[in-house]
Image 1 (cartoon, rainbow, N blue to C red):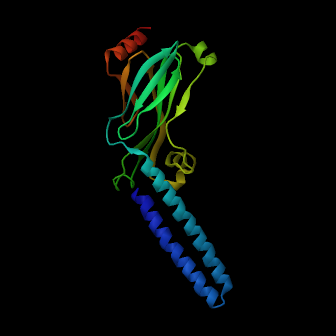
Image 2: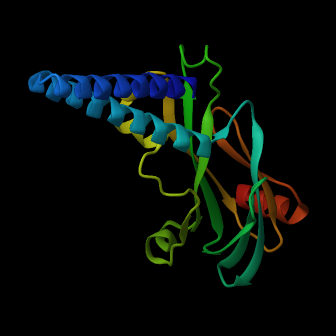
Image 3: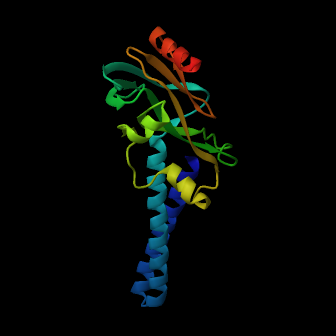
Amino acid sequence: MQILIAAGIISAILTLFFFGRSIRCTRRGKLLRACGSSFGGISSLGITLLAGLLLFNYLTYSRLTAEQVVSRVEFQQVGTERFEARLMIDGERDRFFTISGNEWQLDARVVSWKPPATILGLEPIYKLERLSGRYADIDREKTAVRTVYGLADTNTVDVWEIARRYPFLLPGVDAYYGTATYVPMADGAKFDVSLSRDALIARPSNMAAKQAVGAWDAN
């Protein structure tokens, strides 16, 4: 974050310098220099706006300091291979989804850093990306109804996407990857979902979930 703030401040100062110089050159009749300064001002203004957008998007991600619970999920069966999922994230309103299948999957995006970003105190960041249903049987997975829900807001500029497509713009990025966890659904089952620096982990938190996972492991 400090890198983005510094880049934004420097480019903003350069924007003011170039535009100020362009005005002075125009008043003195030095139109060629005025055009060159205007181009420099427009370029630095673009960098300022990009840094601002990246900083805003960075703040929409959550910090990952160690393995931590990032969400809780509860299920109620509402039909054959249909469940209502209640997704609970601290600091956010609970969300409800109708999911088809006999298993559920949660996906997340993770961005970690390397020096000099780590020297500036940047921690890995993450964002839960989607919640979906799936089927244990491959044939059912190919032909049955699928349900997928996006969990992250759609942003024009996204830190994860920039790191993946244009790594030279974020030289402090060490890794940018997707991670997912999937386990069975069952009526009344509750799960805690933790995220470490390596992966999402879904752990059963009540007997219904433990029995579902136990039966799943036995197959």
